Amino acid sequence: MGEDSGEVLNIRGLRVDFHTKRGVVRAVRGLDLSVRRAEIVGVVGETGCGKSVTALSVLRLIPRPGVISAGWVMFHNQDLLRLPEKHLRSVRGNRISMIFQEPSSSLNPVFRVADQIAEVLRFQVGLAPRVARGRAVDLMREVGIPDADVRARCYPHQLSGGMNQRIMIAMALACSPEILIADEPVTALDATIKGQILSLLRQLRDRHGSSIVLITHDLGIVAHTCDRVAVMYMGRVVEAAPVDVLFRWPLHPYTRGLLGSLPGLHLDRSELQVIPGSVPGPYDLPAGCSFHPRCAIAGVDCPESEPVLADVGDGHLVACHCDVGGLQ
Amino acid sequence: MAGERSFGSLLAAGYRTLREKRLAFAGAVVIVAFVAVGIAAPIIAPHDPLEIDLRNALSVPSAEHWFGTDNNGRDILSRVLYGARTSLFVSLLSVGCATIAGVFIGAVAGYYAHLQAPLMRFVDIVLAFPSIMIALIIVAVLGTGTMNVIVAIAVAQTPQFARLVNAIVLATKEDMYVEAGRAIGETDSSLLWRYVIPACVPPVVVQISLLIPASIMTASALSFLGLGVQPPNPEWGAMLSLGKEWMRTAPHLMLFPGLALMVVVLGFNLLGEGLRDLLDPKLRYE
Image (cartoon, rainbow over all chains, first blue to last red; front, side, top):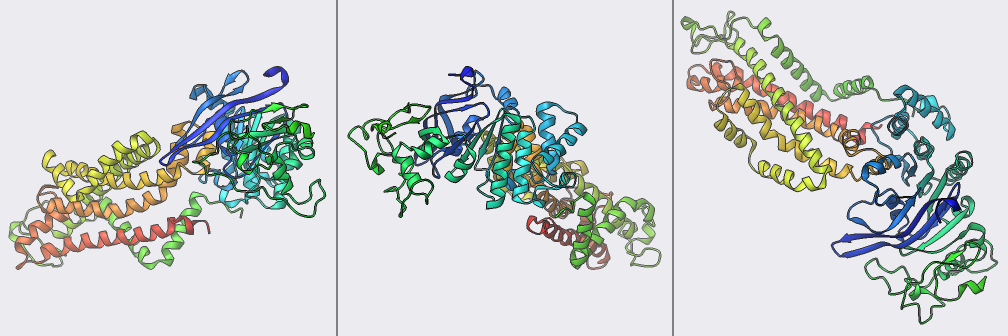
């Protein structure tokens, strides 16, 4: 693995712990994920499964009391988790950018939007203020903001959520990053704007060749936007595959349950299925495979040891003790 | 949407708010008059405030001496006007120093978690004493005089700014846009000064407008006790202190400096309330 297979980002064995008064919450427990060049990877899972924490760990932005306790985040043969803070700052916003869920609260309320985009260009690329400002307006045009000259002088509170998310994207793209991490970028937006922002992301990938990590809990967004998808459960990736493969042949019982709970995507059925039980609390993880108490096909091995992610063919990875590969 | 909010438009909005709020407007008028008198005292004062004329001692208000004269025959109107100059100088300088020091301490303690406990516990200790007492202790140590009064008031007021700014910084540094700033590679100092501290400006402005009258009062109280501005320099508190000896026979010695003090402090308080309404973020974005 590494450069030759076109991987730009390779996360291996990532563990993130939150030390709280009630005990240690293991938010991410040995997560493996790789991202290839110009690929849109979806990361799906329910609330609290560690999607956002994973995204934040890549740039070491985990807030206290979170601690990255193990793992590697390999980016061009350097481990971002062990890079000195000073060098990491030149990666943030420059080679790896992030956009967040709440666009309106992710912008600095006291500066004009164009100045905030220009700031990235001045800081990371070293452009002169006037040049940076002109480039900022160009970027605003590129992300589809009408009347960019006028909007450039607005403050974030004067623009809508969709507009602000475009500003965030323009900021994230200012330095043509190799990787864009989008943490629930459209969750706070309404349906029409959602579609526009997602196709904007695809266009930008096609134009700049950036890789995108799209974090979401919406399988519809994944099907529409992503090339590959990783399904997370309780801080681990349980299944990863190209999008069409995963939707056609889901292997992990959790993925099958998720897809089974969606109204008519591919399968003909009259009734929606539910996954029995509910997500365990963060302080009392089940032993072994964390999904086994809810799993219909759990066997004797399942409470004993945690299954590892294994390739069952064609880049389809699944972490399950049962011989789910045979289902294909 | 589009209309931008420049400094000019902020001033215009401020003017509109003042017009709507009569009391705040009255306060603003008083303060403008106070500042103007403070600056122009040497020009508008009819007499030298230090000139002694014992033949005219304790004379009542007249055409020659509008506010009368004190026991040394000094013109009280001139001394009240020069007193405004002293109060303006002392209050602006002391609150200015307290603002700078307080914002710095509060912001650094709030932003850098490991400095929070040592800095803010010290601030809490200082806050536990009444500010007049802190000022008294400092003057007792440093000695009397105008500059020492300024230092004393600045030290006494710094914790109030520190606590206010600390609370805002603690809340603001968790905001999404600060995290987003970190994600684009901003340094800690840039995050602190360009992202977090601007959020503190409105409350700090209100606090300044409320602490200026407090510092005028404290300075006058120190001078009243003989620990502040020293005679024969004209200062309202010192004039009150002197006047109390002749309170029964010549009440105008206390009346005029007392009125001046009251009107100026009231003016600042009225304006401070108006400013709070103006800078309230909930009203701001309308």
